[in-house]
Length: 273
Image (cartoon, rainbow, N blue to C red):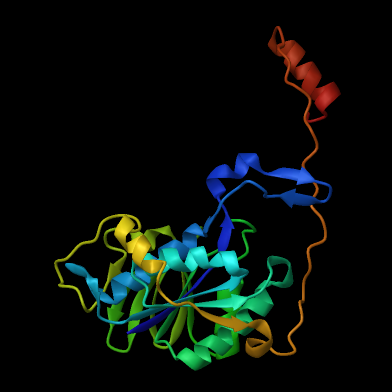
């Protein structure tokens, strides 16, 4: 099996409390970049689908990772190579020159060239909560698409996929090639049932640990560089960043002596009664 996994770098969500508003923009200076967590889940799922779980160092299929961004976005790709990805592609672009539609067009060209059996993406990007690239890509390719996948059971020529939503869950059988976006549950112990692994094999919960030696080896691997002009010729941005407005500051809380005073302030000051 060949799996293509698009990756996006985002400001470390664990440092979100350090974000500052500078004018009408969000200042991310000093906050390290990391791989979007949902994309890490997609990568882990791809690795599980292309290995025997008992011998994970041997790749029985191919995992190709791709990211769109400047030169320093290659750290995202090298982390994926260290985890076990086979090849990496970086599309040269600046963050402010991209939107979801343009990304989907560039990915479509790569999919047409690479011809993967499966495209796995994170359900959403945590920096913007955007989640439309997977759907747009599937529509452009005319591929079947399953979103928010939490379980995937590989079958002959396709997979049985469980998708969870706020209102419940659905179980869908899809043929390959397909586009699937994944949620956290995909990296549970039973998230992936792959044909390469024995029926009684069970994974750990979460993504795999990357040893330091693998990180060093990944630094020596080649990364193919492409351009937006060749992958998405003539496609312009359809959305642009307008501005960021921080929420209004709140007055400090006060103490009230009894319920009567609380009701009075809610009614006459807060206007909620």
